[in-house]
Picture 1: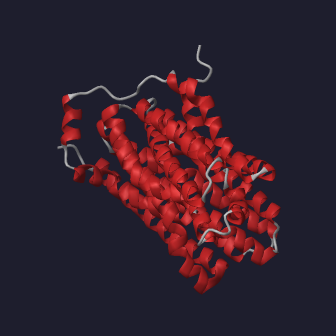
Picture 2 (picture 1 turned 120 degrees about the horizontal axis):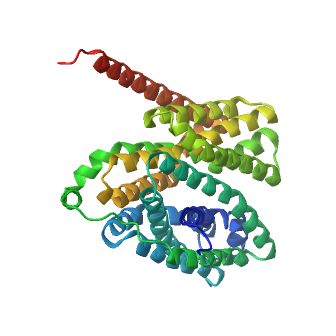
Length: 396
């Protein structure tokens, strides 16, 4: 009898992608101080946090292709090996350059882990169950963000290198992963035709969803990047205050993930985009103008709910739009889009923050999200009217 069920194993594997950044976030100042004599130490220390995301952008499509051609489980095992190796080597790296090299290796591992895990979740379920599990995946990742930041902070109190040892915990999942059955769909003539189709076919199926994933993740990532600065500026918040606020944000996303399956059963994907953009935009609007702590926290909770719906909705939409034979590739490109949005967010937002201030940045993001929610709502209404006209036509 397996120690962990198949769904629980995959959900726990999903938390590893969050551990990558959350675990070492509390150690960055100590790393910068340790390598202070290295040229450009402050800039390179920031890359310790962001470099894996850039590597994931490059690796995820290749991992998706390998999932479709080699199988999901081999990609998952390969990713786990590189994740443990790249993550834990930070505890031994004698220089900042070698620390960055280990983080690049970690990025390769995450790209494989994230793509294979999401593909296997989609393979093993359909419709309502698939929506429930993809929502739980988002919930586990959000909950993992809270746990691993706390764990990383405790480890950093001992020494910053100890935090890198937390990556070794991923080995605890190895026995359960080895028991996972391969989930690659059986080959058929239709699947072979899909595999032989030009890349433009997959681009037509999920290209627009990748754009939504990039924009959505870019707008969400304003929270971990700029929220601490806004809290400090407006409320003179301590680091503990900031940590509590970010924990509440993640808890809201976790609750939304657990509810996603039920909501998605009643609302079409484009309707979920309306809800996601509306919640995130409303939350940012409240945060932008809140002068009191209770209202500010309410805005954070609304935005967290929006995030909790966004990722599982777009992933399931991509699964439904693509053939089973191309599912790994589709989700690989979605993973690339999510992490590219994460990487690009501070680059694109910084000029706005400089020009408008932190409050103005969230106000501008709220306006963009509000426009997106309105456009999605109008598209849903147009689709509904079109379906009603088709139903009212007399049979030929």
